[in-house]
Length: 351
Image 1 (cartoon, rainbow, N blue to C red):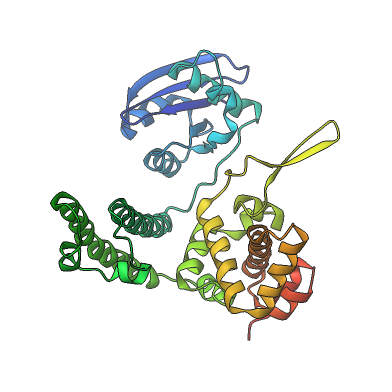
Image 2 (cartoon, rainbow, N blue to C red):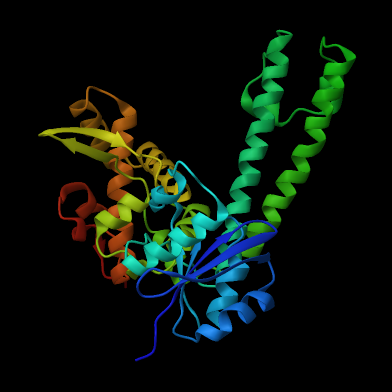
């Protein structure tokens, strides 16, 4: 019987530490080397294709995980949230971290992260960069308004602020330095907007059937539909709607002990892009669809009149609907969504 080995790789920006253990958990070999795929493959070669490898989900895992998989290795991407044995250790070194990764893999206690398909990964990442640019543009408007507030010249609305020109800034009662600062903001805004349009044009050419399906949901247009479809990837990786909604941050966690339960624990675990898409879709749907608005108000009233909680309920229900739509290929059924408690009743067969 062939001896099975386990390898943990503690990956950093320029170098990595590899540790190999046997079935009994004993160190067999280890090395620190530069981030070079050829060198790593040469080190791993003596242990055969039966070698199982764990790599922590760091910012630069793409090249390593993809390269190892292409060469036939069984690679597990370790989710950083499940590595408290490493992150919470009193003594933490690269050597220990690599060993603990291998040990967790051997014991079957590894919390696995999803390896997004290589072909679609650049498209998803480009959609995320578009969101970053939108946030950057919004931040510039906030800072521009804050600058005007400092000198009590913030008399314009948001639309007027967006349409402002350098000449109009120069006409304000501001110090020369503040005018220069504001004009630099105005110079950057058109460039960011132009870049956003270019990204959207690139993404729209790669839209899938899932994007068109999601656009049948009230409040979800091309941008949100694209974001949801790309972030979800393969819907079959979620066993139930609860798994999906938990990943999308659509309901809080629970901490229960001695018969007492508290909500809200670890609320930021999950996908922030899905959370943003569904929460904003819920706001738009509530504003333009009277029946959904009434549903939101009903749930808000049950929760002490808090509109944010009512919006969270709508977002959660939209997430459940999206899950079953992607599973079945059915379009959104608003009537069922409003009156039905059954999560599967929010979709109907497409024409």
